[in-house]
Image (cartoon, rainbow, N blue to C red; front, side):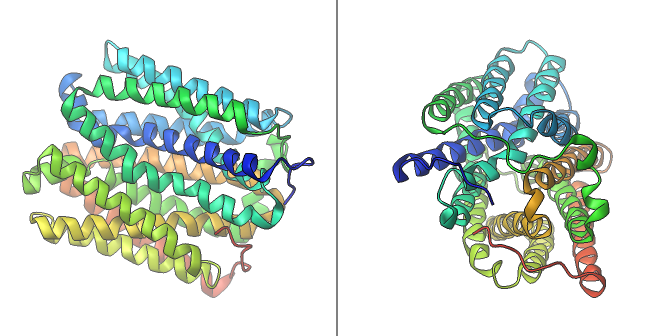
Length: 399
């Protein structure tokens, strides 16, 4: 993979990776913040929790649908400037969300913010790999992806805790200020970066058709993300309904989930280089088992802790595995492949949250969890079937 032509000092290189990781942190927390705030936001805005879930749905939908087009159209834009522009959208969007007078305004703002989020997902990991010496690219990618775990360990639980002390509006206001700090860091330390292996927009959508290995990965990713977010978006109302969990206990469970995510990311960093497909399958099995545990034992403290911990471990591992599999399937068009991956991933977030909302409103929040079980199991079946017909090549490791 191409690195920057004039390598900066080692200190600036890793400072750049840290800034990109922080960007991932604020993007992920902004995307998923409504998960921890779903109940108070729905009450404040006078809507049902199912309708409130559209805050995740529209955000993910615009992130997915816009990424391939915007990444291709911005092929000649310096990536530091592009990332800075994306962070400006994030900062302003969180500020407007905090001040929004009504739910339609919140939805409109998050729709716009979703476009920025999708583009970042497509370029962020590639940027982290390019700002360091080529021999350190894998480590830089793993560090950047750790921003997901930090967001789940610290960001989302912290947002839930801050809301319990203040309000959901104050929480978004604080995240707007945090985004501004990250924007300053990116503008200061990240070097100029031209686009890496850009692909014209008319060719981007042909990649899965021409690449069977990439196509299999995208199918599997879409299914497990559909299932995950169909259930995860409504985990707070599920816990409140089935175990009378307090906001403090829910925040604790989200922290446990996040610590599990960091653990899964760390463990998968070792296993994925040896057998990426098996690592992904094990993570998928863990996702299914964790939701079954939540359904069976979620009414008890120990059961909910075990279920959320395993869920976090499994999801953290699955996320790292799927990035490795995308890189393995399309090493020469990684940025373009990641834009298609972003399309599938974030559209799945949107549709998963939407389907979960329909189950939550018409069947009950338990139905949203069963939806998650079914889709995650389908992802496992797709991956197992592909093993027999068209195995993917061994990946260049990302961790």
